[in-house]
Image (cartoon, rainbow, N blue to C red):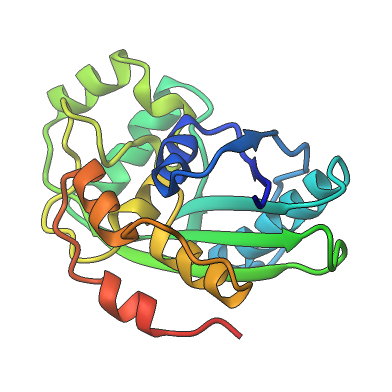
Length: 220
């Protein structure tokens, strides 16, 4: 059986990857996540996912390392995790009533074959935010939930419900686009034993209009 190592400390990514039904280990990658000058949000997450996969692969002798990095992009500017409550308030007000992009890059390494080479993919979802009130922002920030989230929100938060009318990959906004990961695994001759779109939609309670097109594309 293939050994999998998820290079992420995110409980949301662990929850999503567990849907494949494979046993896996978890390790957090210690990499500098500072953006580079002139780097677009999409290129930044690709670079960071690759760096996380490479850093974590050094603790393995065989198996597949899977790493991911996610950012929220508004007007082409990456919004990381808020520094404090005031920063979360600023981000949520900036996003309110507008459509932004969430980029998640994944990077995979087959340690037993090419420990220095990564296979990468990028998912981008347009995310329309509803016109939530100032009181809703304040209550959500008081819950503490925004402080460890890129863009200061979780799409799946049952109390806040910040997103309205999403038409793309929901799992991408949570931090691990499962259909993009599936097509990357297939390119490595690893075929999931579960119906990934079905288990994903059941888990996140969202009827996805994008999965067929995502799975139809091939990763080189």
